[in-house]
Length: 551
RNA sequence: UGGGCUGUAGCCAAGCGGUAAGGCACGGGACUUUGACUCCCGCAUGCGGUGGUUCGAAUCCACCCAGCCCAGCCA
Image (cartoon, rainbow, N blue to C red; front, side, top):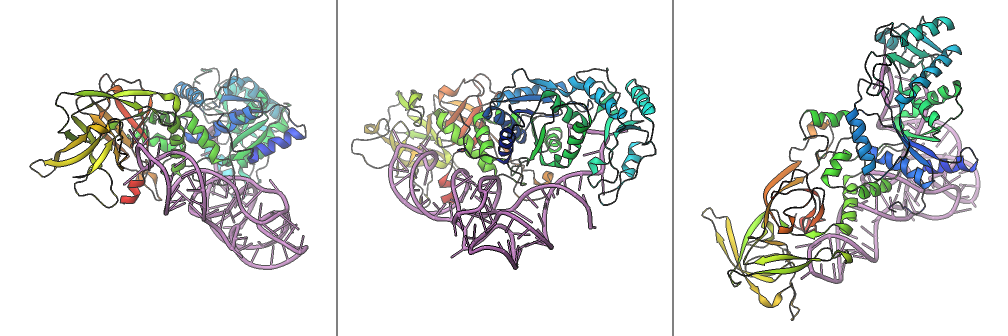
């Protein structure tokens, strides 16, 4: 549907094609394996689109697997949010929902197998000592004095670890590989550690938990994954991934392929930084519309379609990259332009009195809902003698190339009439109180028989019929530049307008509805809305040529 | 001074020995009852650098430079 790019394949698909061609695999099975220790963000969305996208393209399947091997950090709340977000993005794992914790028995079995093969041993060194023995990037490590324990002793000790006979940190199970390997991951990595912590799913059944490197490859193999797609930082782990699978009695051996994670300008993407924003109160929560989390983007008004199109456009490669946020914005505009109903709302109201319009008259004018969607139909909007227009749609002394309202100038009120400004009434402090206009009764609907040109077209709202609304405007979380993200935090990333005026139809709209406020941008109704007090978030502004001209 | 990976336009990214796709951004123009949308046009004698192989190199080879990742009982 929205997946295109005209047959150009990324390097992962090319690798899959090769595996298919030489008969290494026949049905493609991928997986999205989040650890339930935080909310998903746009970077995860890229991975989700990639994994589920490939499964779909190759008519295979994609599993959702929670990589829950560290009970100290994982929570049920995150599991639920992740499932919700993946579904919302438009993907379905069907029957294939798994948890690494479902495989704890198998992991344990394979650990004993490694011990029996003399490829794993119980180490009594503490964390500090293990670090010292590991060596450095340029110097080889040295072997642990416990590395030469007998098979029997290792088995006995490991079973007693499982039985809870030792304290946290007292012993670990390590793979026996090569303490002098230039790849740090191969210097006898820890594969099991003792944590007397209850697990969200297995309770207190286990007090030893497998490490990522051991659990992940085996989970993949158990599920029949053919291509295990992960980010670049795991490239160094691939030899270990392969080592485990080569040394245990499991048949399937998935191929791990790494790609570059997504980075976006003027925001943060790491779980740690995202958590800081939430816990330090820089934002209102994980779903704050400024957050790059899926929950935040959803509340901001981004659509699943736009995020998928964005992921597709960004591509998949191995080069470190930072994508311009303007790219993401482009894809929501592109999507919403086709579907969002057009409505009128005035963010900064300026009162306009149409002196030659009858005092108590009101008329309902027809307005098209979306000129880019023929099936969208029309609605009626009320017009009367007193209206509001946007504050910056009037300039007492017009700037060059400004073709909106000014004294003596005629503009069109969208869907309504032509009006000409006759004079301005000011407050004592010199600010504009209201402006007065005359309208041309012959211009009903926004055109005249003489076809005279009227360059400016303004959006407006009937004062008496309008509903007050709260509008939240957003700017990037971070200012442009380099440095620590906390120093780059944009204090003005949110602006709240509490006296905007909207056309009456917007008084009671259900949360999550998208609109284009004519000439202003795309907006979505926020769950904070209450009866008679709508709240809207601006998703993104329209492209604004005038803003550039006037700059 | 260890290992792994990556360098194509302002930002992404195709390209796989035959003479630099596409998107975003940007600039110009047309259209316009949204200064939106849409539509045209422009935007790398150049592919991190230097040599080499070849009739021909972003693609192959050599050397060099730059950036990212790795020393959790995190994932």
